[in-house]
Image (cartoon, rainbow, N blue to C red; front, top):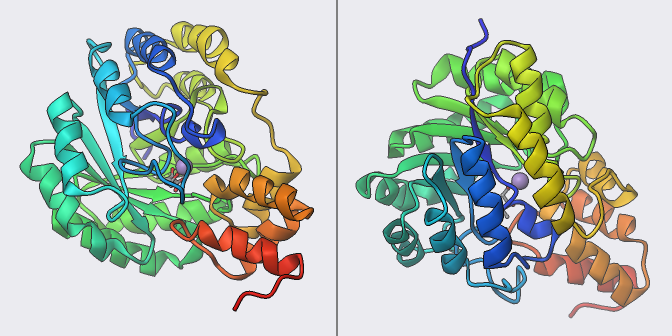
Length: 337
Ligand SMILES: CC[C@H](O)CC(=O)C(=O)O
Ligand SMILES: [Mn+2]
């Protein structure tokens, strides 16, 4: 039976950071957070696109220190809680403690889908700090449901309050989402969540499939401001759920207004499924690789699709961004020694 309540986490100010090369300013974040808070969005995620500590040569430098963005966000909320993302190794205990001190109330500890064991320290710390703590299994399309369950059970055993199935590449088909969420629901006692990317135009269909199978925590990005073709579009999601009599507590009109008036102007161009983002879903490639692949394609005079397809063939995963340049230079005929 479908749960009649869904808790939405707005990820545009974190996942959307990939789409604008991590260039959010305090002013933009403050305005958007205030409006999301006024619309009563329960959780708003604010961090570098690659999570706390992501600002680096490998992932791209942030224009504004993420701690300043987190501080400004916390100071702009009355209703919403601020969430941070952390990939163990990129972010450390130090950054998590700092974000918590600034007032972040939720941490989502993200690992590759086969590497949940590296999340123990940070999930435990999140709990110790009294934060709502989430395990976030990225690239969930790469393993069968049984393996995903094994990894989710690890996160549950470390104390996660929720475990997310994360379709980082936007590659999952609705029946594949169903199988995964169903198995997790049958075998976990904690909440199950779902995070989509719209590269195959399936974010909404997959999200509804997840909800029908019992997922109660769902991510959205307003105006689709997320990596690749973006995520499930929050203002659309909230409207659809209202039509289905599923409560999110979010004000639909306010969500629509802030999408159009505050978020659309931040986007360099409207989010759509371009040939690049489509190939992410088609080849099963991490959505945040898109702009890196475009830059490499320009440098080596290649079609970005060829780079992305080859990254998909090699099953490259998050954290291996340096492989984008390696692959591009190889395709361009350079020898790597
Ligand atoms: C680099 C972290 C990544 O963007 C997390 C995420 O949202 C995903 O895997 O989809
Ligand atoms: Mn994402």
